[in-house]
Amino acid sequence: MLFGVERRELAAQLRVTLLPTPNSSGLSRELEGHWPESPAASPCVAGVIPVIYYSILLGLGLPVNLLTTVALARLAARTRKPSYYYLLALTASDIVTQVVIVFVGFLLQGAVLAREVPQAVVRTANILEFAANHASVWIAVLLTVDRHRALCHPLRHRATSSPGRARRAVAAVLGASLLTGIPFYWWLDVWRDADPPSTLDEVLKWAHCLIVYFIPCGVFLVANLAIVHRLQQRGRSGPRPQVGKSTAILLGVTTLFALLWAPRIFVMLYHLYVAPVYRDWRVHLALDVANMVAMLNTAVNFGLYCLVSKTFRAAVREVFQDTHLPCTLGSRSVGTVAEPMLKPPGLPKGAGL
Image (cartoon, rainbow, N blue to C red; front, side, top):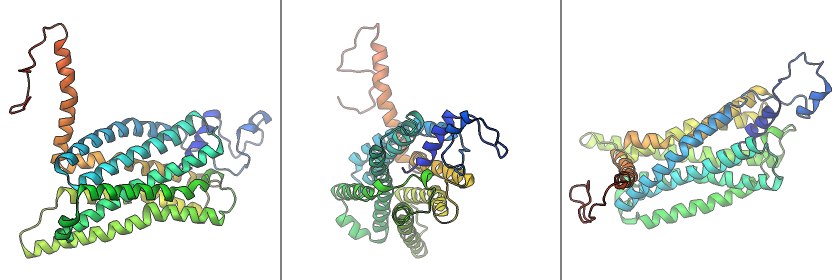
């Protein structure tokens, strides 16, 4: 599966606490059944650190992404700007990625069930994992194209952009992501790649690198360079232009993605052509760390939005106030006589009934 390395190694770590040493020829036969079939298989070095990391990532990232979804949904309904619909879809795809890959794939299947799962279920989960991954990346591509058209072709963007068009584009990306995830039913677990990669395995790994990194990063690079060049042209012809909040968020999202996913792509190609994860513990450890860094991309956007956008921060405060107000009113009603509802206390100034 997408992150099958950590799952298998973790299951072995949970069952065995003694690591082999170079001079361990005198081990009793009682321990022989605990080790991988091949003596050259790389041991787990990270131990339970990935489990702790992913548990924290899920425990913090999932509530934050749910809060981001509510805030962006309010902004999208209020302003009807396509960029908010793309950010909303991006956050929703990050939630699906966290649930499918981090919770179901890694924590549940790897740590809890110790990979005691039928192969058909594992391969079906491959499709969902890669589909969620593709959707998250390519919705960011939609946001990039939308911002490029808004700055470089403003008249055309105003004439053709609408919430309905944005929703249709998101739906098309989701459908295409599911279709592109189907071939990864035959994705091989990197932990099991003891033999040289077959043609199918090599094609799938290159397809993974192209779909989730090289092609999207090419689009990000070209579009962002065009946006920066356009802003520089405006600066030379008039007063210094201010970078819009949506543009700043776009540059931040794409830059973080390129930086956080680069280690995984590099290690994947290194595994394919130089040293396999199955044989070299250093590559094994590098892929563990690279996967953890890549999954961090699903939880950092909330901080970026809060840092850049005052409007988003205000929307988040509204969400907290709306969730706190019913609790406050409910606590006041305990042991007290109910007030007439015509004049509820604490209504904001100018609010209607």
